[in-house]
Image 1 (tube, one colour):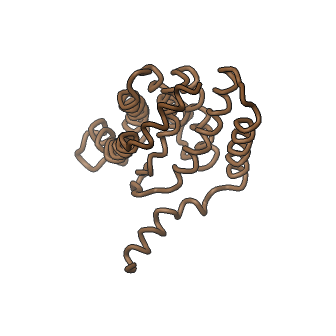
Image 2: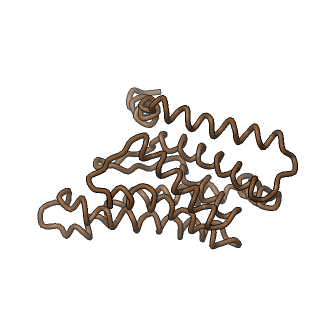
Length: 215
């Protein structure tokens, strides 16, 4: 393994060391409690299952979000399908549950590493943007379609936040609206593609469909 590869791997996992103790505690409780409830209660009603799987999905997405394959200079990154657990959760339990889980995930991201310049920007970049992942729940017959729509929903809120609150980052002479669109598409597009590719892996695709049937 050459030095450049070592440096890249260090950069990929660098943000894991920045996790705050209280966010680690929150995610750990969500993960352990969800696993405990799954193992303890064999016959759960739909609402209980939604809570259990929601906690697990939030914990998994949050953990994966700190493994960054590529990071943008002004925020945003490409991750190993960190949004996929939330998309799958929405696909199985529907848009209402998915939106709630997405908003909870956004608040968790806000607690861990917020960048806030205005209260409206906070709403756009955290609860609204991540809550939009729940739109995947409207596509009960096609997870890939749900992922695309949920991803576009997230893109929309980051896009609006970008040209309204971060126009100063646009290169001289470049329209802030165009800059925001290109900037956000640069990392959200590949991140979405990674999610889609993972769902096409036969073993994972089969596991998702079996999980859906089981609830």
